[in-house]
Length: 147
Image 1 (cartoon, rainbow, N blue to C red):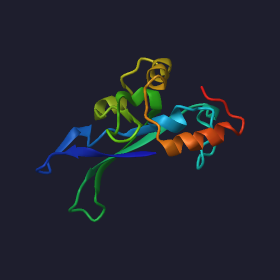
Image 2 (image 1 turned 60 degrees about the vertical axis):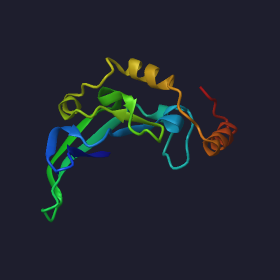
Image 3 (image 1 turned 90 degrees about the vertical axis):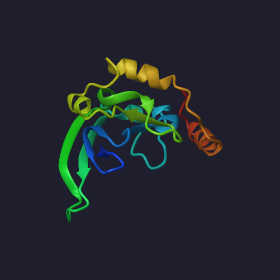
Image 4 (image 1 turned 180 degrees about the vertical axis):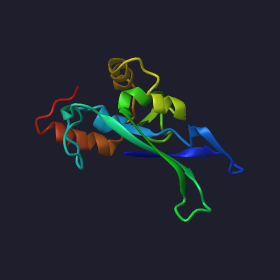
């Protein structure tokens, strides 16, 4: 489940065509990069799922409303169908979604197929911090193999 706000400019005007920022699809340097590893806090390894779907809730922030939300919309697609070639953060190793709302609705991301999505992002040079490397080493020592 992902939640994204419609973009607003500095004056508070809503742009109904874009999300405020790119939606994060996966953590690239752990769960996605090592699909065979069962990471702490996860139900099962990435590769054990038959499919990966994203349920996206897009809303407009309405500070005048007691609910604070207007124009709530749900969109559901396989992750690769809404993926971008851009990360969702400049400081974290996250795979990002497209930020064009019409393309999100249509499932028209930047990849023609799931295979192209996995090929592109699995070869991406994500940074892995020392703590993550230590954790991975322990997890791989429990019988999992690195890919």
